[in-house]
Image (cartoon, rainbow, N blue to C red; front, side, top):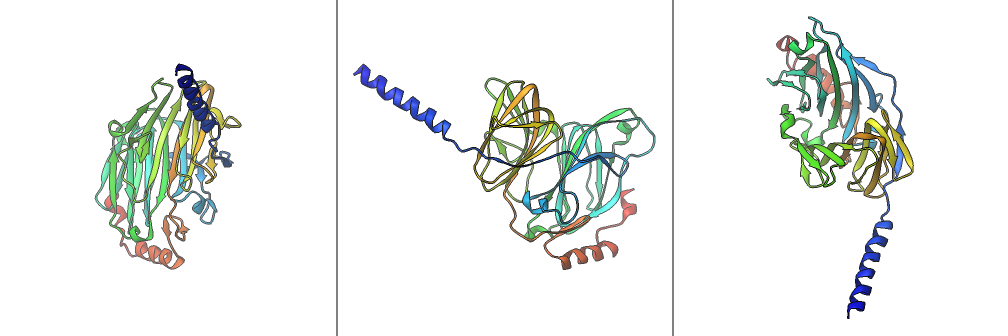
Length: 318
């Protein structure tokens, strides 16, 4: 009887091993190399990954994510003069700003005003149209300082493009936190989930956004729904995807929609990545500057609304 139990247990172990070995891995579609930096206003020195221009195929390929601007760690000298972006309009989508280091201030014509510090997120839903300005917080701006941040644009479904504008200030202390049992993988979850840990951000369509820190020589398996558009930015370090393709600081990997799981191994310098995964919005996208609608007519109407003052007055933001 003991021999029979031993044989049965060995069969179970082999079945698990074989099942693990047969897991089909999500493959890489594209690795985007970092473009040259450019300035957004006077306060943000960014590299743009998703996408460059109003007709780039990545507008739909990474739906619901429209744009990713990455402000690598950059040192600003202290100054009495404001650094930031002057009042400007948005309609039809959301702007989400992640501060890894630095204090930024937001003000919009829907009456929202907030200051975000290191680790915070501010999530503005432009909806039917709003003016806002973004700038280095006044007291922080007087000192020599390091800014490290991401701004992400998230599309809205057609049914919500004319919702009232609103704003989420999400402090660092409210973020979902995950640590693996061996403490080699840590995650900050901003919205959606990672390993059943939920983030506080509220989105209109299903998505997961989180930052992973992987210790040198360690690895993590990431599982996202195969039909969700998934990619990640390497913030620090280097590693490999599925044990084959090297990925390094400043690159953005777009994964194919073929399977769910892919594995990330960190090299000896460790790895930090910013992960996006979301259910695509299967609707036409027409983008022109700060307006993202479903057709050209609605974009023209948005321009007219802005010019006629329907989004508010710039002087209310000064």
